[in-house]
Amino acid sequence: MSKKFFTNNIFLAFTALILFTNALASERVTFHENKIVFGAGCFWSIEKKFEELPGVINVDAGYADGRGLQPKYTEITKFKNKFNPDNFAEVVEVSFDKNSISYSELVRFFFELHDPTQLNRQGNDIGTQYRSLILVNNQEEKEIAENIKSRFQVLLSEEGFGNIVTDIKFLEKFYAAEEYHQDYLLKNPNGYCPDHSTGVVFESNQRSKLDNSALLVDKQILVLDSEFCPYCQKLKEEVLNDYDGSIPLHFRYSSDLHNLDLVSPTWATPTIFFLDDGVEKFSLQGFVQKKDFYKALGIFKLGDTEAFRVAFNQGTDPVFCKEYQLFKNTPEGVFVDKLSGVPLFDTKDRFNSKTGWLSFTRALEDSVTEHMDYSYGMTRVEIKSKSSGIHLGHVFQDGPNGLPRYCINATVLEFVPRNI
Image (cartoon, rainbow, N blue to C red; front, side, top):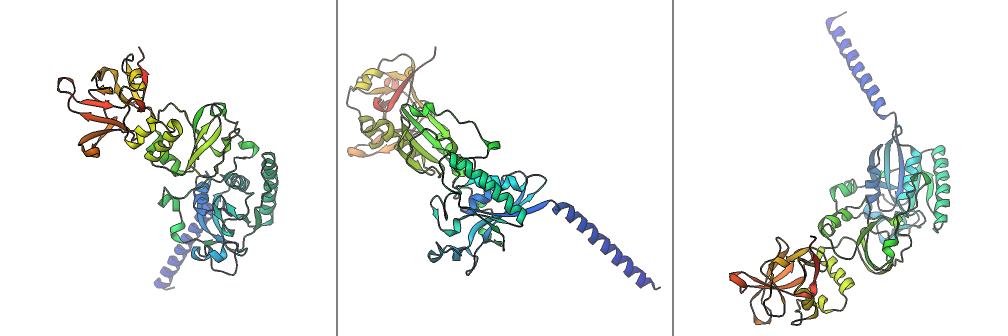
């Protein structure tokens, strides 16, 4: 036996051992992995929601259950295919660890996260590409899914919903979507992520109903929230976190809207409802800028009043107006923004300028902003509330002892006495 022959055999044996070891390692990693395909509307939000489940290994956006056309986004979104029964559906392929999460749990989650009674649509997403769909791998999975579907139908019927239209079929082939669709909401955190859930959940997941009695009296602000919605978090951080107004602010999920008389759709998050005795007066759907929220709040709270005209049209109170008479000699305390509730001025800085408008030598720190005002042929410095952006008045340099004089409209303020 030659030395070269011996060396080659040793090399081949060593290579085989490495390949066998890698195969065993791969088997250990993938042995408990399974895949299932779901269609429940726009695959961006569905992908994100499944990815957040413990036990889910990976979620890929894609297309399935179509024939006669190419499985491409540019093809399935053509108008001629909008109601084509052979169109591909937007789906997600969910890879999961069977030891961490069961197939049944995934199917139950699927039914809870969308409205399976809507035919070829989810909310404003209309067309066959958005159909409700479960694509199974074998007969056992099909029977389990059909059983869960029947159980969920009972729960939906009890809450007044119609028949489930979800198709449960055998998977023919899954086609991965274009790369820009994969992890879309991770790449675009403020992207489109609607919540179409009915609020109905399986018995093991039922939450006790929140008490909505406070929403049924007087003026209330209701924000339709969702734990899966990046715009909801953005709304809280950029608009609502510093709100401390006199109209209470409430957050609810779509499953918590019982006893309320709402007209606007409740699938889009966030939505801000302005309620009076539990009845919707109007709403703002989707993320809104701070100025738009406070303009809507001004309409809701102030209506057609002098206060609204002052706040949003740079108006001016009548001299010695009713509100001025109420506020000129209050006990110690602070004057707050009539809409946001944020403190603006302190009675310690108030003085009688004998002008017929409230006057202060300063504003509270970081509570107002200054803007040049050239209206009426004059050069003045306008004062706005930093929190809401409403017009407050002007600042002049003729206050006592060389201090400024903040000339402020009383109609846009509320008074809060100091706790002693």
